[in-house]
Amino acid sequence: MGGRTRGELSVLPESELAGGAWYPATPMQQGLWVLDRDELLRPTQLVPSVVEFTGTVDHPLLVSAVRLALGRHPSLRARFRLDLKHRRVEYSTHEEPADAGFLDAAAEGWTEDEIDRLVQALCGTPFDLAAEAPARAEVIRTGADRTLLVLTSHHIVFDGLSRTMLLEEIFSIYRAGLAGVEPELSNPPHPASVVATPSAQDVAAQVEEVVERLRGAPTEVPLPFERSGAAKEETSLLGTTITTGLDPERTAGALAVASEEGCTTFMLGVALLAGTLARRSTQRDFLIAFAWPGRDHPDAADVIGMFITTVVLRVSLEPDTTWRELLGNARISSMEAFMDSDVPLDAISARLNPDRNALWPPLTPVLLNLDDAPHAPVLAPGVTGRLRPLDPLYIKYDLALFVRVEDGADGRRLELSLDYPADVDDHSTVSAFLSDLRRSAADLATSPEETVLEQSMDAIDLDDPAQRLDLVRSIWQEVLQSDDIEDDVSFFESGGDSLLLVVLVERLSQASGRMLRTVDLFRSATVSGQADLLAAPSTEPRKAPAPADGRLGMLDAARNRRATEEAV
Image (cartoon, rainbow, N blue to C red; front, side):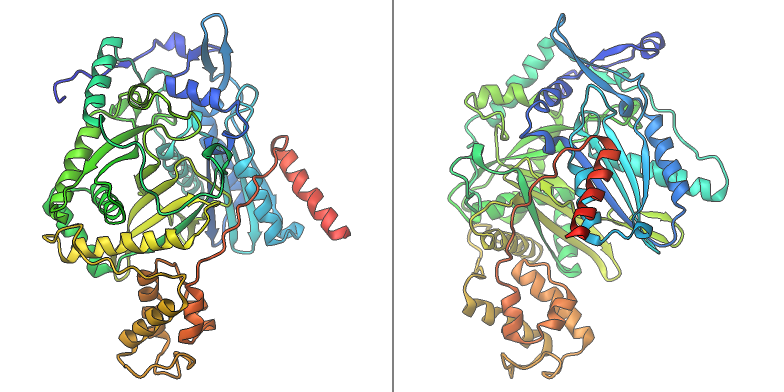
């Protein structure tokens, strides 16, 4: 495996990268272009970002920075067509780039709900890849010190790393404008000049290696829920998210054990996911998908484009496997998958799962990714941002785990987030699974030499009111250091204060898998009231926004809704 020759980057002559040239789409781009013909799949092919800034923003300057960034990259000017003669999808980059708009929603009197609906339209409206630029942006002033930047692009020319690169470029241009200097920008090559072109013989050899490594592994994974639809083809692509985290002490322990075994945070996530799935079922052999950046060559480092690929790793454990040994297995499995990251997944899937459904992932319903995108970007001194959760959220896998290490004032914290379908029958089962994941992480941190499958997994049934009461009562006793706790007496009357309330929020969130807010516990200040908070949340699937005709169409549609509602 280590001696294989990878495909080399092809460097096209300058003459072929100018004027109105058309370039052949990559196999991944061709697949996405075809899938985009299907209305059902369109929302999953968009890459939206919503950044909310707090502070004083120079809106004309921000709009100008977005326009400059969008116009610099050839991929964001792309238009696609089907070449019938050569039976291939092609794209050109000589058209006009995407524009950035500005809406002063605060001055126009837009409500929060109206703004949210517009943001949903901006994030979820499909692109006409043949006629319009595959990106859109809108700067929205929502208040005296609140501004939204809504940036959406199509996956066919944009991946997760491209989003991070583009946002950082926008922020850099903005800061340079504030300082009155020219921004320092790279001169990225054309995406068509950095395309790997392995020979058919190399691809065939790579596929054979991967097939042999994955052969025999189940393509199904026992999931912690049942979907409402009669069949996957009838279920929604809408998803929801739930998050939990480890305290700094256990985070430090888990990261230390992983480091001792030569494991990255991603590999730690592989061990936690495989171990937790094994604890909850009889399966011991798992296929887990993950996203690979696909930018191994330095020439591709500054290119906005669709380079990311989906890779599948295989990790297994035995009845006597310890957490430390499982970390070793995860490391080896991940390294093998990294080496084969350029092998076409479709070719592997055709060999291992010929009856696969084109709508759903072909080898495994489970995805694991490392979430290393900046969640709190700084636009300028005094102006901080945060990535807002997407609403609605579209999913491509039945269960997706995102692992993140967040730096905080009191230390680093391991955060675990699950994306899963919104149309599940019982959401509490997903919460229970997330609690199991957090418990696995705590076990790994404190007892790495213990056997994964034999450790206690006394899960709390959050559907059981008595168990919820017992859980909350026990944590109150721990936080208040008192056994004399009454279910209907306020936390503050029982000896708590505002600092201990923060501790209580963290401990309840960890123990239940629910992400609770301090204000929620303040309003429900008794054991019984907080036990009710831990009941399964109701998650109703949201309808996707209807397509609109460009930016003005989306704004007009939103304004028409406002006028109709005001008239009523």
